[in-house]
Length: 496
Ligand SMILES: [Zn+2]
Image 1 (cartoon, rainbow, N blue to C red):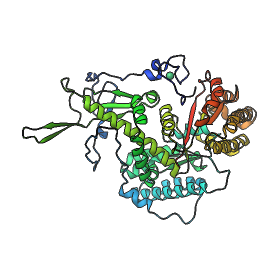
Image 2: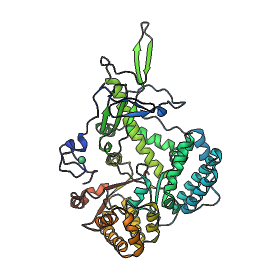
Image 3: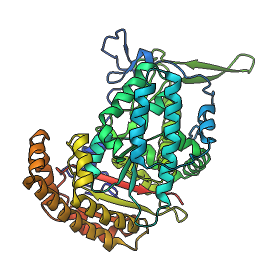
Image 4: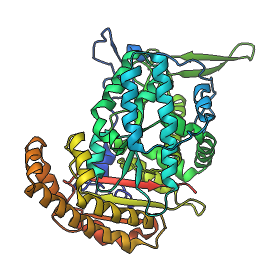
């Protein structure tokens, strides 16, 4: 089913079950009632804040320099602030020579080998790579058509994502967690962990398929754009009201914390925004204003938490809108299409784009995962060697170009479904017949089934500019009962 389609609470859920939305994804309720006892023992490393949420003691600190803001009584978002380190990097001159992403990938691990033990040297190396990667991606966007397809995503495990987009993307940009850990001054263990995470993806990074990008640098490069877009979104009552209807709230908990997440994302991403700073405004005996700030106080059943709850909802609405804009704009900086796997996020972006002055968005709903369980080395090899992959990428490139052109190229996109099915069959044949693939196959759980699933059945992918969505209804309908195949929502969005 198409999660972007309009559906009411009594319609069948977008996920394809036979249940109504309100009884399925839209029916999730908060994990606890206000003030409910926590019922779990704290220990040295964790503190329970609600029956379902705990926080690491080491994570309980307020960052320096966080400005104190008064609630405004309407949805709000903190503007993006660019730290001085990032500002300095942004001003760094572009490298004299543009290096290919694969060369930068190899270079990255050489640098880790040589500088891992020396934090300053490491920081300098990683900053240098970050600037060079931005330069390389910019260079890609200046290539003549057909240009490589570059996707950007910060939600999903990169190895798995490449397995599922192998046929779609030439490059998949993911956040560079080493850069992030160094910039935010995290401890050496965190930095080392981030490096070892990247080492696991080494074949993909060295092939230039996975491209770790400095997310903070991307946001900072267009901080004003993010702030302006967010301000504009916050003025749209239709948008802010809709986001509010999509929120799932837990709390106030026994420790005066509140957790908020988007309803449809709760199952797949059990992360929630946490709110705790609780500001009470009172008037003193001489008419002066008294502000009381509470952090993790004990739940007080006689206190009216209503206004605080509203403030937190306002902040959550702002946080979701700002995050969506950060993701969009970051993609733009890295010359990549932003890809989301979250139905909530995709719907939010679709709604953002309904004003006449908003840009064209293209949605591609795909349910043919290719080698999602393969290890990084296998994926890198398949991408480099398989003719089927290259052939298909070629088709995807032209179809995606069409998708950006609102409403006019829906035919080309629906044709992509057949092409993908065909190429999927080709890849499956290779896997079955070639000796080297036979050798690999037993080691990769479920590869044949997944490839078969990809090849079988009707056109497995349809796509359309949102303006032409009604023309695609029959295609979506044929897939309604096929949701067991991992579904992927590509939401490619751009700002013009
Ligand atoms: Zn559902």
